[in-house]
Image 1 (cartoon, rainbow, N blue to C red):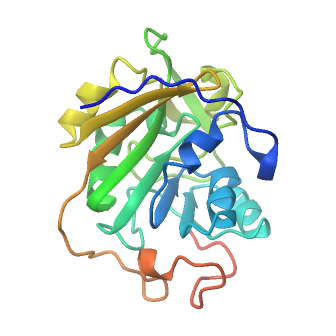
Image 2 (spheres, rainbow, N blue to C red):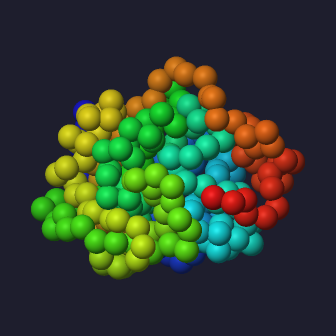
Length: 237
């Protein structure tokens, strides 16, 4: 287990980046699932770099914004049916998404199931010693499962403001993520800082066949700009 505390310079406002976003995008390898993608800031950035990416969010308006920006997105609960389950190379949980639903342990177990062999989750966390207070998050969608990951706010918001009213939310700080990962059968490989934000890389996933392919969306292999079969309008959550 490596703990890599590195200071990464803030990047300029390229493609709507928030300071620190580049450190996440640069670590994404292969087909990437952006969970709780919101309006798709990171999904779009990945697409612009040529990385196959899919954003999921429980809020239809957020999904529409992502698609309008030219990236692929579906209106989905992460605990629901996800294309390519068990085959994703990278899963992103940024902007407080790890805490949406109020059960980060259950969410990480689900993320582990979504990852493929050598898969890795990239998770944004609060600084060490941050107040792990619970709150609520807002979404116009109605997630069906406890721990549903919906939309989080921008990276520059405070912890309480990152979440949106309507969904339970809890902060997860850098001191907690290793134990949470271990409980989900994952392993903390890297912990780093960038522009005042904290992130963790968790190894997980194993050899498994996907059982959740949609009839029209066949998972990571179809995640390419303009790939046929991707619906043009948000689906019901």
